Length: 235
Image (cartoon, rainbow, N blue to C red):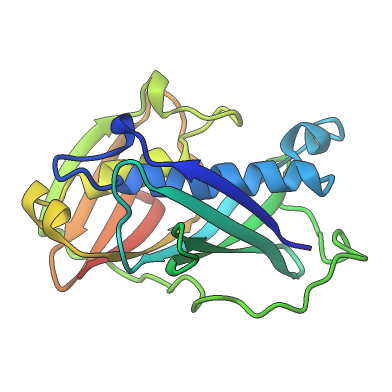
């Protein structure tokens, strides 16, 4: 059964043209995932009682119309599939008229907090209806990234999440900030694909790499080991 949650685009959530920041859109999608997981009995605190926690493995979002200040956005979410190591959660974003303005898909792994290893979860959502189609293509696999631009960032207090590692949405913010502000604020929409492979932790120095093209490619690494790869297409 799907859950539908509503959010208002407020002044603190917009950029210079009065449109919702990418970080706000990603934030309400993640909040929806968290709230709906609790509703269906799979919330983080519930899992942590058994020494497990959810981590985001892959994520894609496409926004075809960026909402503006004052708009109320509804986010429809449902579990699409429960695979060997991943729970697949889907999202549709709609405006007040009911028109679809965006879609998203996320793949979540359940890790053992002691070993940090993923757990088998294919039977976890037994009894949950899994018959709705996925609303968009799954996150693209991202290969080698050419270093047209590079930057460094030390993982600080504001970057850390409830699992004690680098927050996935903060990673996206750092990558988007490598692009020219004018390109981001003048775009009509965007698609983001991101692959998370390793955790980042406080005080680590991240190397951010960007390959500039029609589809911008990114890599976040620590001492030569890749943590995260992403692609962002603005249109």
